[in-house]
Amino acid sequence: VDDTGEIRLSKNSQYMGNSLESLLTKELQEKILASDSMSKNFFPAEYKDDKGEIHDVVYKKIRNTKWNLVIQIPRAESMGFLNSIIYS
Image (cartoon, rainbow, N blue to C red; front, side, top):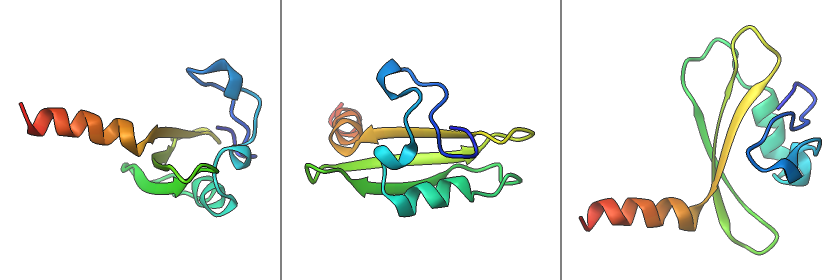
């Protein structure tokens, strides 16, 4: 995601060229764009989509660029993965 919030690269090509604001809440987009470029850590967040489903998001500014790495996964998918580990 570039410094204006536009998605420049994505595994899913339908997201490319869209704004983060079209997918996330405005508040979360603002947090992502304002993230600390010196931090080595990812910042966690969550949001509910239009259907009321919770999504987990982690983001981090990519050093020496104006871009952010943003990873989003539906909570149902992340919990399914975690539950498979717990019950193994």
